Image 1 (cartoon, rainbow, N blue to C red):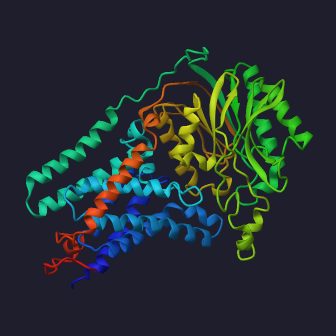
Image 2: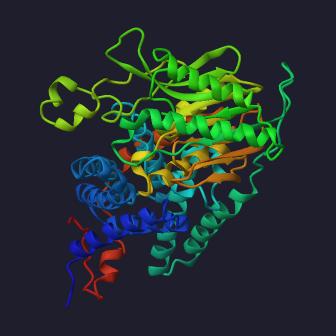
Image 3: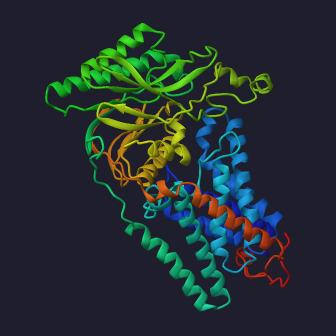
Length: 528
């Protein structure tokens, strides 16, 4: 029985998406990511561009519906809508892959295409949606150190190039072009070998101009929440009390000599959903915790916008034990449909669930570089860790470490926390900065500048972690290059696509024909 090639391609597209999903947390089979690219590339071999888009969309749908299953906590309709939207971008990748396979040296052009499409997806529309970038699968893999060289785009390029080279080896073997096969194997091997050899730094640095220390002792407080889920914000006072209690217990252990005295303490996002500027009792509680531990606390708070009381601010506030609230950071990238509703007047009557967000969060316009005791840290709130430019600008403005304040209580046990934690680890290597992740109910963690995990608190666990961490000032190659690598990749992909559009689909061995139980070879270009 002969299986139609179109059906086989569809099955392979689904399979490549599922393989890619398994390479991400919580499954974390990172070594499967290049294989997913290889299977998908072989799937669209010989197709026209329209068919390439279709197979890319199918791959994207199977990938994102698995990766983003945590969105179903909000509603199955939200999960499906976001999955379909995200899959369209992989449809674009499939469209371009089908065209670029017509050209010589196509593994290079396909690598540039993956980077270029992700660069667009990360920024448009409404500020972009970077979740599920190819490079984000590599937080716990052997390619991680490429983040130091070129950030998440370099990780994506490494995965895509290895995957494309695997297909090139297979194609060369079909035609017994063993020289080409050897070159393709060598190229993939070089990418695999070079990554771990990159000189990612980990030592602290004393700031020459100001004499700021090379290290500091910090504590992360994870207070936990009464119950996980969408009713979390209805229990605001209990959450604040939990973080106050954990901080006071930390102070008692410090006083007893059981733990070292921290020089700064970090609380998570939403640790005080009660505005301490408008509620004296909340301010008193936070002040008591700061006085007990004797050092500044970075508090995650929801504030009424003083310029427009109908809106709110997602803020990190430095709370001094003597002088009270001081510097603050306002989240620059509120989440569309999560923290604010675009086109609210048009959509509110159609989607009643938007009533759960009665007031829109307003974006800040400054990076989160804050002085917390002796530590000049860069505050990044929750999903902001996914955005390259935002984190990089914080480092360029002088952050010597990064703090990711996050509240993932709604998504407990769904895999979302692990995916966000992977991004934090990549940021630590990308910028050679210690990254402290402070979560309301997990996972809180500390990563050193080379990505080493030195402390962790699991989900649904109240507690604290204290560690002495390195502080750094030097910029990495990734900091210096910034988004120029994405611009270059995008330009390369555009030029290659223009050239490829002038050529017909190439007739070459493809995965669908190989799997089709030795179907009769089709000497014509495939137009399915």
